[in-house]
Image 1: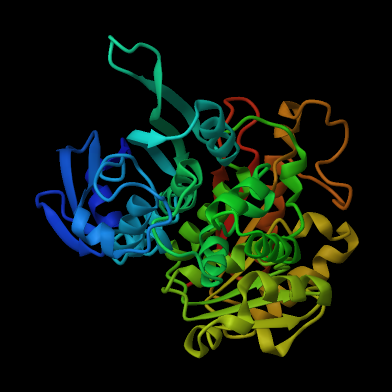
Image 2: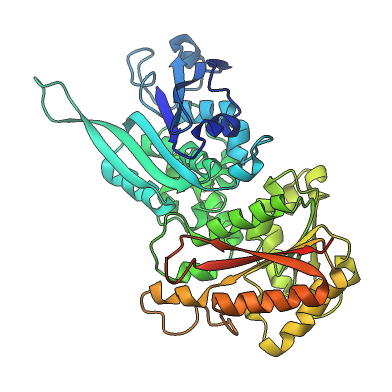
Length: 450
């Protein structure tokens, strides 16, 4: 069975760094049901394709607990994508699934153009569309026809996906949804499968419109396991981010693009010890924890409820001690000085300042830029000029926003704050730019003057 991943990101051969597999070699891996191979049928700077080929050994397959109730040899397991391929993907691309890349960490955190093809997959075109479209994929699912003398279509699909996503997100989608489409598992499904589902579904499964179907199929229709997984999803589900309320077409969710842009900015300023100020339910904290460059991560929020939510989202109680020691959650009001916040490499105010009453902004500036004084401060906020693209929006993007600035207003505030507290400042757009109104989110990167 076969799966291919293609990118046109320039240079496209960086895909080899993300997958930790050199494009000039054929890589082989022993897996419980056979041998997995990774090779690159094309590898140029303009376009690069990695192919994962799983050669199933029928004798090894017999040794597995077989949940398919198929004949020992006459079955579709050697060629139709299933949990066999998902398990091979998890072993072969382990680092890429975690979003870790020693050589290209900034690229691993960035959405890139991707094309996925699974030439033979059991399932229906309708279900494939319902599963992948909500995740930002454009889906082409063509039924594979039977022999001409028989006529009609088989129960198999040629599945093609295209979109601009983080590679880690794409691989986790496949890891979960290939067995869901196939609707079978090649091994006994035990309670520990819930952890695999929640871990791979982090950040997308809780809000997926087909999450009930996904949980039930992934957990082999074991109702007790599925119900337990769904309850945990409901308990861990964060509040919807503000931009999700705004129905605008974009290549990937703005929240995802913004987190990627913040990570890039933190890499740019070479930060290791980071403050997430106004961390809310922990969306950015989750991304920071996955990046090993960040040795100390502090989430601060005035709301104890938000901090509890962040702790659940990070699963602090289940993290290994070494990982847990990297993370701190502190209750703190950003308009008051807090000695705990001093001495850090960088602070992030991601979609925070617009929630502060304008008369209180000087107090925030004094406590963050003046007292805490990190080497760098990364600030993002909505671009009010872009609001005309949101159909039906008559006021600000969220009811709790106290203001929304134009680009000129944000740059004026940033320049004044930088001058007052001894920083230089540069600006970056976040999201797809319009030639007149700019990008939906604007970002300022403050660096202490040398």
